Image (tube, rainbow, N blue to C red):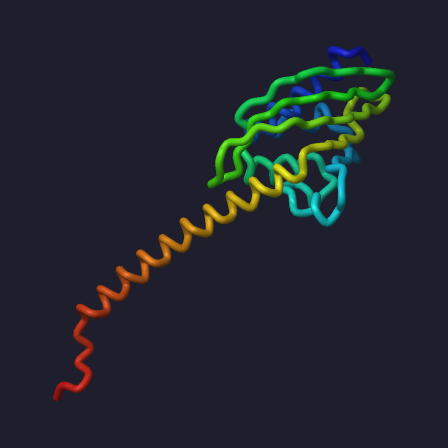
Length: 167
């Protein structure tokens, strides 16, 4: 398999992840393909997609929680059945701020030309900070909504005549 074909298959995965269209995944992923974040398991398990080794499930979990706003391939090296890719990406957790970080992926391909394994190295500290900030923003928003609902409910109850104490 040549360099351009390998990079095109990786591009298909990233496009599907960015758009939520996973229909092309079976064409580029081997049936038993695996994906993992590299790092301390107690940290990487908290990442969107970090609880599974299935690339399609990881992609769907990432898409549901993390917007991939932009990405640029900084460099790629292909040797035999492996492709190493350095990315610069712009991301945002749902409800959070936009942030930029770098990723490094190592992809392995099977004899049929499909991806059998993907490993990703990333700035775990930045990702954890951004996840925490997005969680706090969502929590604050949910708390504001709950307070407004409670105020509305209280106003409605105050204006209702329950007939208590009247005969």
